[in-house]
Image (cartoon, rainbow, N blue to C red; front, top):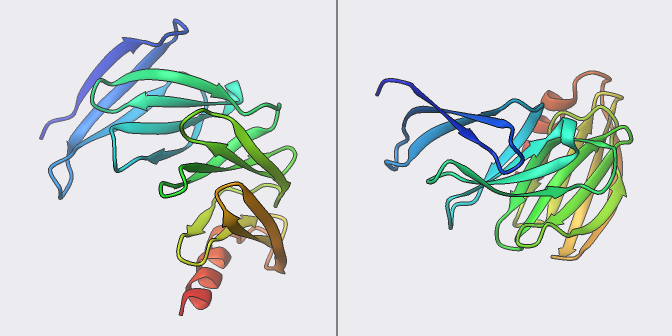
Length: 183
């Protein structure tokens, strides 16, 4: 399938650019969303056509309809922290967002955009991993620590541990740790 670009105006008047990149193995249209804004992370909802996009320079999350290629709404993260990597717990309907400056794990309701909780997390994080069966959330930081959180319910989260790692090796170290924990 040949790439094709589409341009639409967002509700706020800014340009949104979509690049249709092809079909995935399930026959679902693969779309890359590029906003004029600084975009850091995104998550797809499998039960609908919603996509959640971190708009870092706007300190907000855009909710985009993948089929209509249109921004539905935009939710503020409620601080000037730079929202960056994101994971989605579709069962509990929670967006797990890591912010920088300061390092924070922010949990957001994916239906309303309400912020459920904020917890101190690794600074300079560029990744997040969520293991749904164990309720563990892993936030590696470039400062040499991996923050491990426990999700007890949709609205209850706690910091379990700060695990030492090598500074600057946040992604690789976290993936090894997660692999070892899940074995």
